[in-house]
Image 1 (cartoon, rainbow, N blue to C red):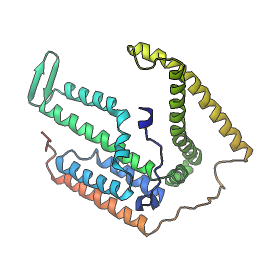
Image 2 (cartoon, rainbow, N blue to C red):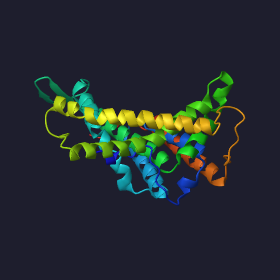
Image 3 (tube, helix red, strand yellow):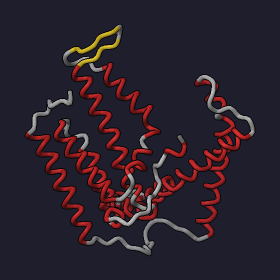
Image 4 (cartoon, helix red, strand yellow):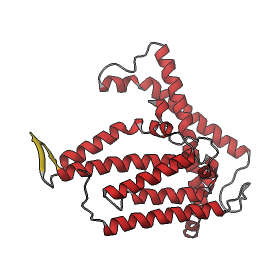
Length: 274
C-alpha cells in the first residue's frame, strides 16, 4: 500500500503537458476540478471523461501509474459512497432492509460522488506527475502574487507547499524501510484486530517521526548555511514566460468550460445515470 501512494511524485517524460508553464497547469487543474461540481448529468461527465483522457494521453504518463494512486483512497471512496447511498431519503424507494433504505436519487448521487472523487484525484495527479516541485513552487508563487498586496507571505507559503510535496515520497520510502526492518526483527504488522494492528504500528511511527524531525532540522540548517532568505528581491534562475503553447492550453480549457457551462445550463439537471 505504501508503494501505491504516488501523490507528489514527478514522472519524467517528453510531452506537451510537461513543457507547459506551471501557472497554466495550476489554473487549468483548478478549472477542471470546478467543472466536476457545476454539472451533474451523463453528458457533462462524458465530456469530462473525454477531456481527462485526452490530457492523460497527451501527458504520456501511463494510465496504470495514475490508477495506482487511487488504491489508497478506495476505503475513503467506499465509505463516502455508502453513506451517501444509505442516508439519502429523497426519491423513489428501490430497496429497504431494516434501517437501510436505497432510493433512485441516492443511487445516482452516490455514483456522481464516486466519479467526482476519482476524477479529482486523477486530475490533480496529472499536475504533480508533469511538474517538478521547483516549477510547481514558482507557479504557485506567481499565481498567488497579487496577495502580496494584502501582506500575505506568498513566497513562504509556496516554499512550504513545495517542501511538503518533496517530502511525501521521501517519508513513504522511509516508512517502507522501517516496516521491512521491523518485520525482519519479528514484528507482526498484519494480523490481529484493528486495535492490535494500531498498537503494532507504534514501533514504526516512533522512528518515522524521529527521522522526519531530523530531516527537517538538516534542511533548515542547509538553508541557513546557504544564506537563504525568502520574500522580495529574490531572482529566478528560470523565469516563467508564457509561450504560444501556453495560450493554446488556456484556449482549450476555456472552450471546455464553455461546453460544460452550456451542458449544465441547457441540458436538464435531473438526467440520472440509472
